[in-house]
Length: 433
Image 1 (cartoon, one colour):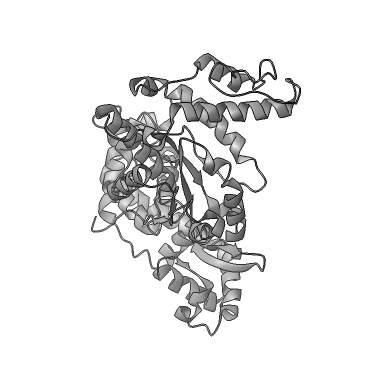
Image 2 (cartoon, helix red, strand yellow):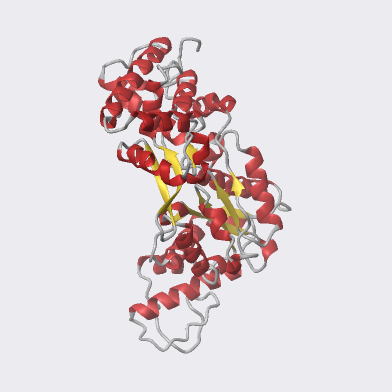
């Protein structure tokens, strides 16, 4: 039996992976109705691919998956609604990787996954056994001749050997593209919705722009697929401004942290979804989680991580049977212990470094080098050594801009927020909860 069952729940209440495009994912998404409506309007009305920016952990991937699922559910109830379906998994940009091949395999898996939805919508489908054959062993059966590939309208004429890797890849790509064109013959027929996530992993806007430009005539040109490009720290906005991407990717939608008033509902819905018995008490309930959210600088992913870590600690202490009020007090004790532990790694930070750190987190935990005057520095160069101190202590993380290696955006880490919590005198008190 896992610890969540000891607490009276069937699964992890504080899971950090993105919500999925499922009924449960839709139920668990909180506070994003306006963003969901905007995405659905974009997909139904515009030819460009959408994009989004927001801090890491703000919930961009969850937002896209649930928006696409709700569009699919709306079409099931009213055939006049646009027909969109979320691809079964998101993608991440990695330098030098062939994203198109990954995408086409996920599209093939998605065709199988949504076969009932396609049939209900009256869509023409390929032979699903043929789709499975490609997924198990993507080697074209028979070669040349310009015949139908697996009975679904693709021309298979190639000069390579039918058993060669090159022939296999080329045949598979053409076949999946033909399936997409048959299922979604025009823009009014609907589309899959896919996410290309974490563009900031490419480190610089120059690399991200180059990767997106390379995708323009491949992944971004696939028929029957609407993409949402997601990233943090200004990477998306600076990347989509390329001349080659004009009219291909829209300017990003800004996704802000959830409002404090939405946070209790995040936990309430998870409790309702996972509760095994009526008297089960969440290790971190709505009040405690609201406190964690504040401690974490309003970063939902960090707050969920802290809630998981505390739950494990509570279970290991043999405190599964404690009541809600006692758990709130234990959460305060645990947070103080964690803050003390992380502060041990900050001995190299100078008083001036701490002044900068405190001002940074008081202002929200994010800045750019150009904000140096706000921190009473005369120049970006004067601020730089203190940023380096905080990076070495794992209190902040910096993205780096272009080939000159200048810092572009400076963001507090989860460790940094906990240390800030201690340095504020544990002022984010639970006493009035």
